[in-house]
Image (cartoon, rainbow, N blue to C red):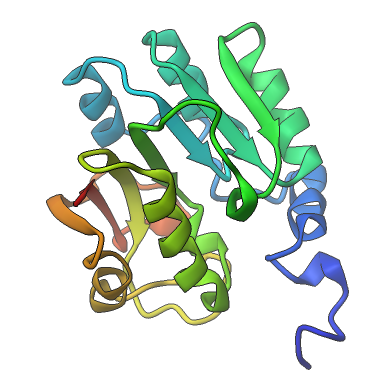
Length: 200
């Protein structure tokens, strides 16, 4: 069965897929908090203008705002945005319901934070993801976060091999950090890497 005849609730490139999962609480990728590598990354830097695409429940966006970072949390699922709104409360976060691939930031970005967004995208969208990340970030800005590096074909989460990830990014980015993750949630355990890429 191809994507044309699948209902939208079975197509992860469509908001209905994610609305269904957030609506039923079927969100095993939701860590309910902030992972250690990201917390250390934030603690080591002055605040950066940050975009969190596919923000889901918004835990990292809330953490960034609490640390005084300017942050935009973006998701195309209205149900996810409602959940993020509840998590964020009065946190100073620009919460946007919109499409990452059409997003234009009101201010120049310095960081895009990656967490369970690329691995949520069908492979046919990976080239578009890489082009948009490069288009959104000026030279010396950072793409930092967690990548689901494995051969898992069925998803989401969709696994990506390191050579595939490098092929997507190396024309526009230089990898400056790469390490295994010690506090992954079960759905990613043993197959997740923390990486930081600097825009060329």
